[in-house]
Image (cartoon, rainbow, N blue to C red):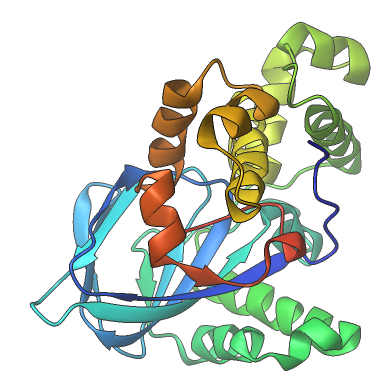
Length: 270
């Protein structure tokens, strides 16, 4: 099955959660989730966090977290899944900003998230890009400062990502990426994490899961979807799916409403 061609660097999504709890999981995008009703509790970086209406949950790529209702009424949220390279592109320092506490009521950050949740940015490149810059600046204002990355590192990581995406079905080794980029695996892995927030191996797994999600939307059998994406079998795929999104493929289809799949190659649930 061919990979979906993507042009939009972010995806909007929304959910209304009554009883669903997300198991601990990770994804390789930033998530900005504006709590719209109720109380959202989640464990993140060794502590239980709580978000109430108006607050923005900010999840860094590859950080383990879960999610559950904080009271009997459940909770709702509207969110954005944004590629880490998009935020890095708009930041002079180059690396990825990090908000340790995971929840913010910073007015500038809340305004920036709300602006990107509006439908207009998807149809206006200038408006969309300006809103992304505002988000990057707002996140910078409330985050720990990351280390800078060089233009050479950025080009190497971009080449590695492109190679992984092109060969996700058969798989890619670090030795192969070394030969492609001319950089040793240790430095490549460090720079990859600085610019993508995850490892090359997890990036590969996520690209396979992107293909699985597209197949689910197309109505394909899960066993076929798993094989076509490069997983050993359906059970292997399902384990990775839940580890990435916190729910099973079946729950995924029933729980989340998000932008059409072709707008974003990185699916996110919570």
